[in-house]
Length: 255
Image (cartoon, helix red, strand yellow):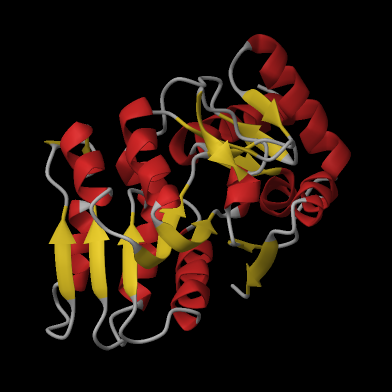
């Protein structure tokens, strides 16, 4: 087996494990040029092993997300950095929605030093994290619990969200299209997130760099509905133009 074949096999394994890998990180990992990685990705994409996205490669499926355990470990440092940045902009004694996602769970962990927060969530993991602070009031939505990640979805969860109007809604996303469309995999989860957007004074979108250009089949909304996007690393220029056009503030977390 030659070097290129071994490298492409490893790239396929990394994308399968993480759900996405950027060209920059693959260049660093394999110590080759960006052109070499692009050729590898094109080759694997033509075989149907993965999907070529803007700045990297991801899972070929647009209908199913990567397993939760893999997503939780993927881009862990970046998610924690985003979590700290979001937490720094949330005042004590605020009211919040926090939805499903590994990045929003990182936000919850970064909020534990706050005081007097009132949080409504449809994420069991977020609730478990936040209930460690006795000054918080945590309200958890009812509905169907997804075994794979502790997310709560369904009409009951949406109905609960609609009973509140909060200061800040904190949401995660599976993919952002170049035209600003926000994409996810589960229409039931998206219904809850849409209710969060409608019932928040401000909406903070948390998305690590792997989400730019990543495909998913369910449309949650548009970047124009967001107040601030929190991410890591430089935003690809085509996406940055879209965000500027819609007056969306972008905050880049220092990893």
